[in-house]
Amino acid sequence: MPNVTIHPTGEVIHLDKGETVLSGLYKAGFAYTVGCKRGGCAICKVDCRDGEFTYDHPIADTVISEAEKTDGTCLSCRAVPVGDITIEMRGENVRLVNPFLRQINEKARLRAEALAAGTTTKE
Ligand code: FES
Image 1 (cartoon, helix red, strand yellow):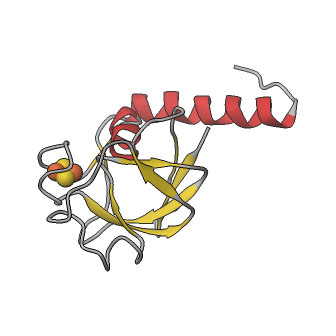
Image 2 (cartoon, protein in one colour):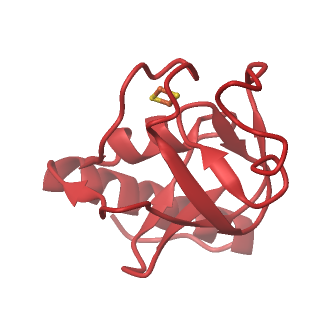
């Protein structure tokens, strides 16, 4: 399952399979400026610096331009990482609003990594 690394802070967020970037960040206790959460307002754009993503729904040309489709622009409320990705916020950083959710996400990430490596972790 993919991880999202936030540049330049280095926060690593674990996503469930098929989960959008925005959903994963909020579920992990982080927040940043968002609007419609449906791919219609474009306020949730971030830059994908590394890795690939797809969209879970069609994205209108009025929201993502042709140039943005190839320059790493990522509509976070609709973007589903294909594997690990690195993103950079535009104009602000994510805010940790729920440290408890952050801890749960970190444990899930460590569990997934241990599972992938064939080892186990202590809880
Ligand atoms: S929040 Fe409106 S397009 Fe993502």
